[in-house]
Every structure is written in C-alpha cells, then in structure tokens.
Image (cartoon, rainbow, N blue to C red; front, side, top):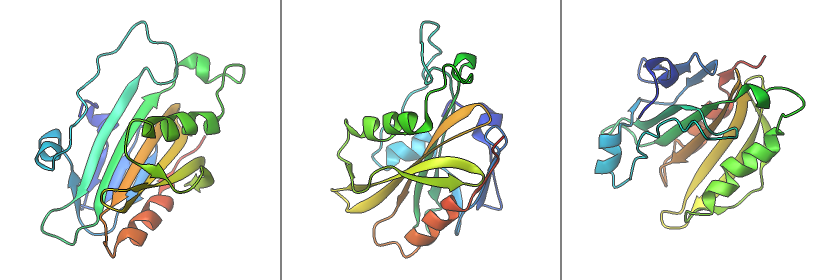
Length: 189
C-alpha cells in the first residue's frame, strides 16, 4: 500500500474505519484489519505495486493517493474483503467547464476495469447515495467462487474513489456488510 498515513485512514475498535481525506466513516460488522500486501500474497492475490507519479499523465486518474484494503480478521466469522482506491482530482476537472459526469467516471472505474477480469456484471450502474454524496453501485459475480462483488464510486472532497467489496461466499454477514457500506457517513460539500 502506498498511501500516506492520512490517506490510509484509521481502523478503530477493529470495526470502525474513518478516512479524513474522504470525510468517510464506516461502521463495519464484526472484526477487521488492514489487508497488507504480504497478507494478500498469502491469499494468492497479486497486490498492485506502488505507482510513481507520472508528470506526463493527463486525466482524472493521475493522482492516486489512497490505496488500502481490509479483511475480516482470520479466525473470526468470515465476512469478506474491502479494497479502497482514491484519486485527487486535478483542478481542471473540478471546474464546471471540464467536469466529467460521475456516471462516466463510474463506468470507467467499474465496467472498464472488469474487461481484464473474470467478473461478470449482474446489474447495471445503480444510482445511490453514500452518506450525503451521490454515488453508483455495480454488482458483479465472480464465476469461480460464485460470490457477489459490489463496486461503489463516489466523489467527495475533490477525490473520486472506488470501493470494491467482496463478501465471502455463503457468509451470513454478506447482507450486513453491504448495509454497512451503504449506510456509511460520507461528507459531501
């Protein structure tokens, strides 16, 4: 993970995640911990390496400053994993003249990123609210594990973020996890 300590946020009481950069607070069910790159490797995942800033990059996804993951604490009731990526939007994308609609960004961040994965969308992008912020949710299916994956995209505090939530298959807490995410507190200017 290559986020700053501030961008990483904090996990308190092993179930309350707060991120001051995004103005986010999620009360997660049960017990969670940060899912480090080392842990991800032990689970057979390939963590993304830190990407150095590219001074030639043009577009809304150049300034990733949030890249973290959580997993329900092994040895407790299995619930799932959560990955959060966030990008500070360049000033030119924050003016009404150059603003890209949230739906367009959500398509790029969810459907566009699934082109190179085995995930299959089982819903279209659904407009919802996360806290006070407008957002989009996409539900997909992992055909290998038959588990649902939820992708959430929202914009807040000059950032765009993608929250990817994968409840463990057959977990009785899957609905609770989705409800926890969708009832988060999220500031919106």
